[in-house]
Length: 193
Image 1: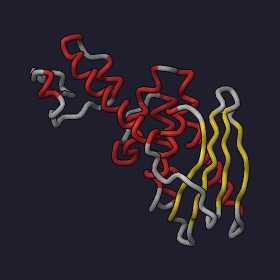
Image 2: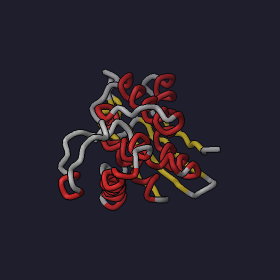
Image 3: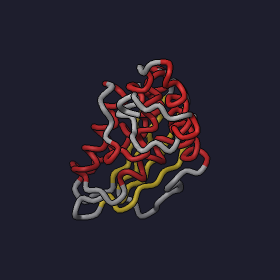
Image 4: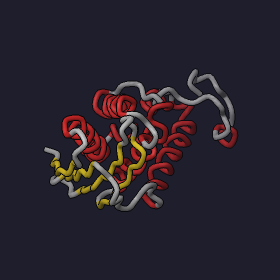
């Protein structure tokens, strides 16, 4: 558990109600708690694979007023993001299509779930929180990120961080362009460097 004093057997570890503050904190735990580490890592891996195999909000949205394509030329990840933002500055719909690794595709699925129904101010906060977790090692906020905290473990593989943040950077660019476009439809392409 977060206090690292839980002495439950492995079978009961999965039912423990105390969550770790971060995956990094678990990774720094003593070896006698390795079974907790494995259980959390397995759970996060399952969340990522679930979003990859059964993506949420996949498919084009012809009614979208923001369409942004993001590409990572180094690894070949590609996404196309459709957003519908109403006059009250709320994301009423978000969907995507894409191809690439399981991390990039799971990340965009997770992201669409996190932003639908949120005002743009909250979406910017969610983006900032995710980027801080991935790029700076900041403490993740589960209420903001939802399943996005499962991607925290990707930080152990620096080469894969760009896979996880591609969709979030693309979303951020789309929202910024929407703010300057007024009522005009936004369509743009973006390439990660």
